[in-house]
Amino acid sequence: MLFHEIAGHRAIKDNLIKTVRDGRISHAQLFLGPNGNGKFALALAYAQYANCTNRKDTDSCGECPSCVKFNILAHPDLHFIYPVAQVKDKKKPKSRDFITHWREYIKECSFYPSLNEWYEKINIERKQGIINVRDADEIIRTLNYTSYESIFKIVIIWMAEKFHHQAAPKILKILEEPPEKTIFILIAEKQEDIINTILSRTQIIKIPRIPDNDLYKKLTSNNAFNENEVKNAVRISEGNYKKAIHFLRDSGKEQFYFENFQFWMRLCFKVDILKLDDFISDFSQNPREELKQFFLYALKATRNSLLFNYHNERIIRLPGEEYSFNKKISPFINHKNGQEFIELFEKAHDHIERNANPAILFTSLSLKIIDLLKMKA
Ligand SMILES: [Zn+2]
Image (cartoon, rainbow, N blue to C red; front, top):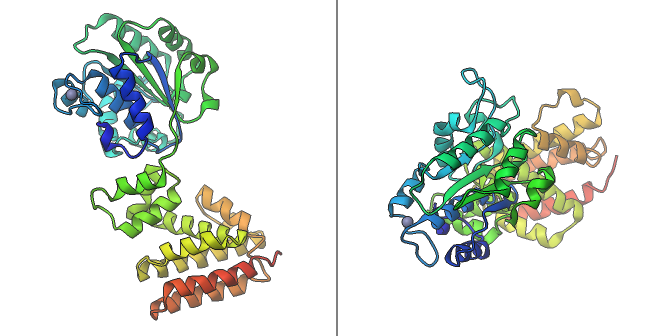
């Protein structure tokens, strides 16, 4: 992984690079920040840079023997620890048992891993993965007894929230008395879920969400996606690379409509005319077919809100986020105005088909919706 391949975080990259160049790399660091922001990729780029034998000012060379092994995640001095759980043929699982899956998955997710996907990859969706004491024991053995070929031994611990209570003290012990020339990089999303003693023994590096313009640059850099779609994806993904990619792929369509519908309704509710105007000029540039699908989605969401009003919650089958949004908005889409909402969205769907100007249509719809949302049940 090279620094320049990672979206955003210029200042953080510069700082990391400086620690290597100045020879003051802290031996235990915690990269902390929200899902999909690239902290794993940064950790890996940092580790690669620290061991690159032909470092450039701002990045690894990408070609030295060390970089080549980093590229395939198979450097003998690069160790990964991540949450796992029992599977059929592994009753006492540890990270190393899943290393083939891990290498595959990290490539598949383009170095932006997430817990759910990882659990799916190793077929443990229904279980809670943990970092267990066997991993702690094994890493101690590995670090103490193997000779190394590079400048630093690196241990990347992904999702430090998942330490089993038995594993934590052992890991703490090595963080306190680290073997020479060893760097631990812990990665986590939620500070409040990490054991305090681990927090106090690591240097915390907070890694924020990816700024919108950096995410946009990254997603348009290889021309894989249409610019307008990328704009949409960036707007609703809150600096989360994974979320943006998900929207941009077809499987994310339903989620894409939901996110946009939710976003639009919130702006109407808040009567935020400025942001509504931005939303409309972006969103109305989607292809007509897409807009038609969007209004079909809006109809579905309206019906769901009405079902909530009539206490038919049990027949509503929606993913969690969508369920709670529909429930929340249901007092505002109710028996008094429900029919009007349905007519609005049906007509909008027809107008789009008959070549109405989408931006004008969305503007007039938004104004009507602002009024309708005021009719509380
Ligand atoms: Zn190199």
